Length: 231
Image 1: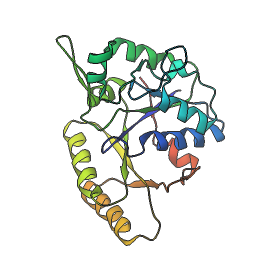
Image 2 (image 1 turned 180 degrees about the vertical axis):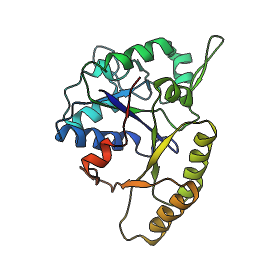
Image 3 (image 1 turned 90 degrees about the horizontal axis):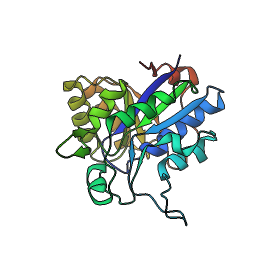
């Protein structure tokens, strides 16, 4: 049975893709047929033929060693580094929920563990027009997955994590735990951030990732236990 989990974060550029790559690598190294999925990806470079390279997907594939085709990983790819609703307004190709779901379900037949990643933070606008008003939380709800919250380990993270966790709790979006990025072992402030975030959210910190890490410091069995059967 295929299982999935969603990677969200306290904001943009805090390491969601980096962490997703390490998670996928852990599963790949264990021979568990992992895959990666991201509904909409902004800020991508062009190939010589003018097509866009889905950069986050390419990074995850490179780091993890999976052979999943890039075209399976992200149905909506934009050049401008804006939230998807604005990038689509400028470039065309607004996100269609049916396309997102079709791409997601197509993975079930071929992969055991799918790690889905969000765009930006939990309130990132995905599509805003006359036909649809879609935010990242709607994508999570559409895929019916529990989440992990990725956050920077440094100053200010208590506020960001607690607000994100509380918002998701109010919206009935299940969260399995927190992953700290840019972790410095022995740093008194970051150690206190970890303690305070666990205390204030009631969520476990399941892993701490240092800059340059090439492996996620968590047992494979503990990692797979975070995933939920897809439906």
